[in-house]
Picture 1 (tube, rainbow, N blue to C red):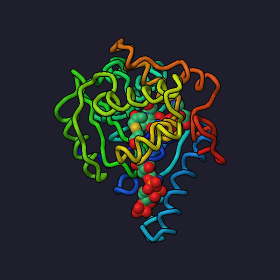
Picture 2: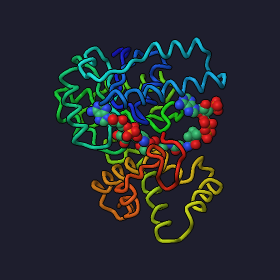
Picture 3: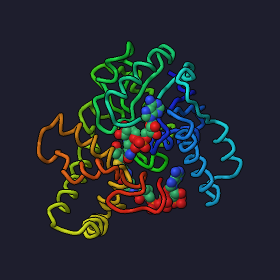
Picture 4: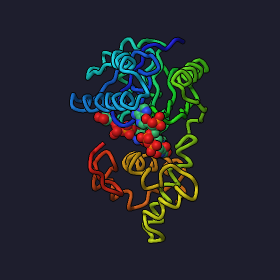
Length: 286
Ligand code: CAA
Ligand code: NAD
């Protein structure tokens, strides 16, 4: 299956990074959002990254121009009728994702692949609302998508070998290393990472150490590039909470239960860097 035309739905933190990565690798990319303002914001993030890379001398002006020429935005899902692969990167909510999968199934060509970038939700539930379960899989990128080298390919009980192979080749063409995960909550990485971040919140909630000391401990003690609170604000507290809930739903073990403080932060609208306020405050919303 030759993938040439790629669609990305959702131009937030992840969708914009995935669209940027695919355009850099030579694909024709279409990015969809729900409003012009959000589409402009997503495209602005992508163009900002290319400006930054040009200024740093990592890419030439000419390359940046070529990348820009390969990507366009839309508010109309019907424009996805010629896409070979669509990657869904909308909010971590099953009802919203199912609505989108059902709509896309009626729009994209027969045989096209629809993949989800979900952090933790069951892929087969999204596939269940389509008539192409064999062409559906998880394609899980890591934040920031243009930089992190891993992609998890999540195979459901219905995903075909052809779809898995096509996604493996696609991930490699982006310069990523794919690993195959089963369709279980959290897949491989988040099943380990989310309980780690939840433990850090519980540690702080119970007054065992300060937030700064916990971050410093994990950075200097383990060589992690970010401490857990820096990573929580970077990933998004909303996304982390929804992913934790999905894992806890499947494995009702207290280690996976979202701590009350995390829930309260999300209820307060403190989602992290993207809203300017999370465990710490940021001068600019991302
Ligand atoms: N496009 C292309 N390149 C980019 C880029 C972009 N949008 N943003 C940054 N870069 C490049 C920079 O140019 C730089 O490259 P050079 O060294 O060639 O200059 C490099 O990436 C590093 O960037 P910075 O110097 O700006 O920043 P840094 O060195 O402080 O690293 C970081 C930033 C990569 C985010 C690092 O802090 C890190 O690895 N943090 C941990 C991230 C992590 O754990 N992610 C996983 C989250 S979990 C997840 O994603 C799964 C989920 O479902 C929730
Ligand atoms: P985000 O909130 O930054 O972006 C989501 C975007 O989707 C928003 O801009 C929203 O307007 C848009 N959207 C919602 N419904 C839409 C629709 N029907 N059509 C088009 N656009 C729509 O979220 P994010 O952090 O980019 O996460 C997106 C997905 O990627 C989630 O499933 C999340 O679990 C997953 N993920 C997130 C991370 C992370 O670190 N944040 C890492 C890997 C995977």
